[in-house]
Amino acid sequence: MSKRLGALTHRWVLLAACTLVLLPGASHGLQDPTRPPGLEETAAKPAPERALALDSILFSKDRRVAVIEGEALREGQGFDNVRVIRIYANRVLVTDNGRERVLYLERLPQVRGTQ
Image (cartoon, rainbow, N blue to C red; front, side, top):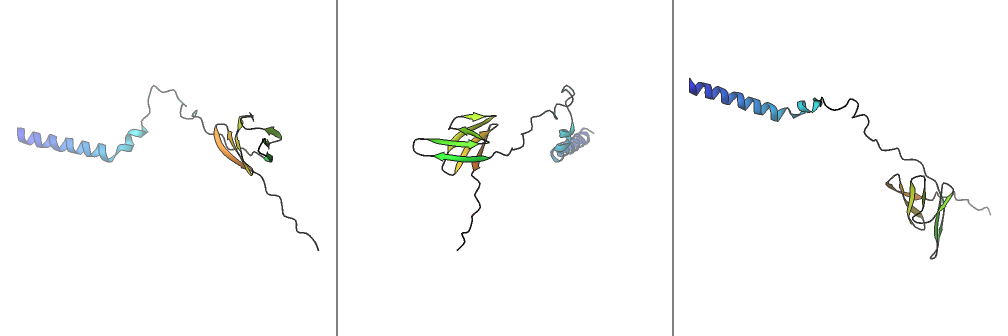
């Protein structure tokens, strides 16, 4: 009887272990009863990327200025959570709400000359 009970217990333990291994997703559906309701919905979502217009770049060996949204800014300066990190001849590296972005000048339309 003891041998039979040991074999039966062994089978149940094996079945329980296989169930836990094969169905791990079932435990993810459980919620912590001590967690306040609605906590999952209040997680910070990243703000959508806003459109920033790079109006012009003044680039020389002595001076670098970028005009962004009508504001003339040097490297290190900023406005409205936008900070200029580096000014290049054709682009500007900025942080916008903590995220790095690269702003490019818009290309002007090419006008063909008449003969």
